[in-house]
Image 1: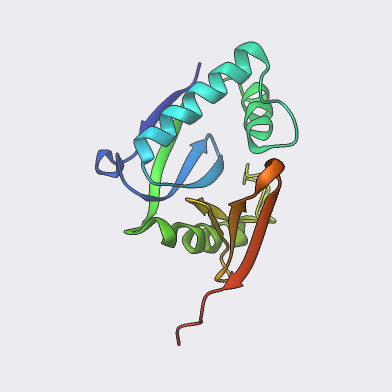
Image 2: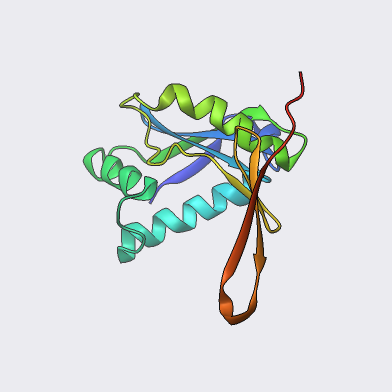
Length: 151
């Protein structure tokens, strides 16, 4: 069983980009509430370790493989690396933190293509977005657009 501990308790219940350290390796994510997200990670890792659920080509599998090879790791440390005031800002902030980690062997993230769904809209770091609207017969129609660039 892995315990999750915030390095700074003032980082609880914050919106932003977080990093979880598993020994010398780490995972980066974005959330609207750090405490809720850490609880989700704890439950998901526990279920994956005890029941084998969620195993595949994903970050959870990379984390589990690291933990199984390093069974002395009993504590994961959580830090807020960038606080965001608006949910919309999470996608660009996460992109900024993840891109330099793409070739870092200590990074346990599996995906580096950042996007965030807010309501029925998928936002991407380049400012483009897709609006999902549901039509008859369960078919999904999408409309992609780009936000104007602010200079």
